[in-house]
Length: 213
Image: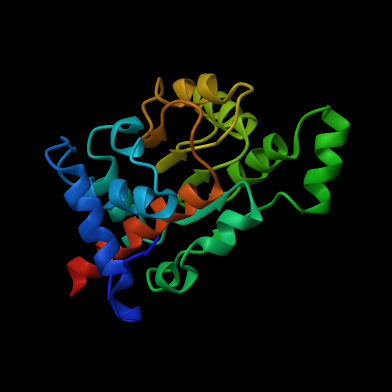
């Protein structure tokens, strides 16, 4: 069998990928202003389900971009997500990326309280005196704890990216976040992952940079 390959220059591969995504989406309705976020999730995963399962609170993208421009920092629940976020782009606006999952004090508190490290790391993040965006791609317990902190008036994030992947309490934890008054971008259902959490952050950063240009 002869396989025909597209003749695409290396520097044009991403551009061609987005052309294919746009073509295959066709007339699929997307919320105005969220298109790049959705397309980047599809680009990262090759999964067109994100065109339907990504949920945005009103003006979530615009609010997140404003927060970033005013120095908001990003807290993730995995080192993988942290490594995937464009830290140089975020630093241009004064922000940093944090992941407390490997911190010794987080491990100690989690053991003492009988919770997950993700839960303890959200408590540590809540003590930061900074504007915060949470990018959760792995641990539903992190989302549950964020919900509790918000309900108790101990935390008021600029945005929660709720995209943990899996089966146990994943769907339920995402639904909890969607019940809050906090801006959110949530991948409803079981799909998600640290790569999706990072790519949403990067989509927001690219959108800001494009507006600057």
